[in-house]
Image 1: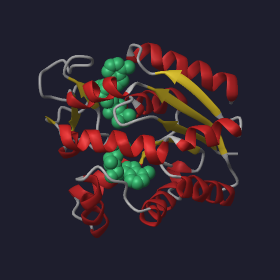
Image 2: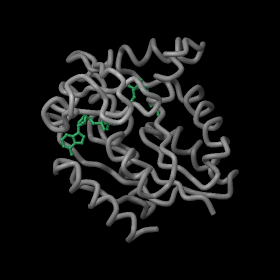
Image 3: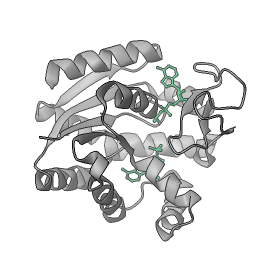
Length: 219
Ligand code: ADP
Ligand code: AMP
């Protein structure tokens, strides 16, 4: 039976950073809806152009578009054993669609890892975030997780850049959207007994250790 692990947290909570580590430790691919939209944007596909209108404003891309992109990704052969989902679902309808989708694949949501970080810390994280241009979009922080050589990715050597939606104005909007539209999923998964809340304000390695401990207790 495939394993589906969900990562939930505000923008900048550390989902992508941890998903990259979990992928290596668990041998499951990381599927990040934001990465998929950015990849489409880079390739200038119609989906990328549509998503850009929402991403630039810090709003969520409509559910039907997002769900159909995730459906296609989860049907790829490398996802047959399950995935770590990063940033999806982000609304109640997306969560319902995911349940239906996983049932089709003979699976279900196994565990939801909630990386808990206060608003003020989220802003600090987003303000210093730099991302690489490689397919895996490795993530650094100017102060908390700097690359060995300034401006260059340690893993694939591509140049680092700041995301267009990491401006002060859009950051605030994204955090608000998280609390309004995504935070209700925390109670939803807690009621189903699937939630593990992790203190995301610790060092990156400590958060990883807590996530792995929560996973081994639940899978
Ligand atoms: P998300 O995917 O949840 O939006 P990221 O993984 O991109 O968040 O992390 C946001 C920023 O915070 C990045 O610059 C990352 O290097 C940094 N970061 C992630 N986890 C931690 C942590 N535990 N402590 C300090 N900085 C962190
Ligand atoms: P992220 O990379 O997770 O910070 O996402 C960047 C942007 O992509 C978000 O601000 C949204 O505009 C869009 N996005 C990512 N995931 C979703 C999702 N599950 N539903 C709707 N929009 C999303």
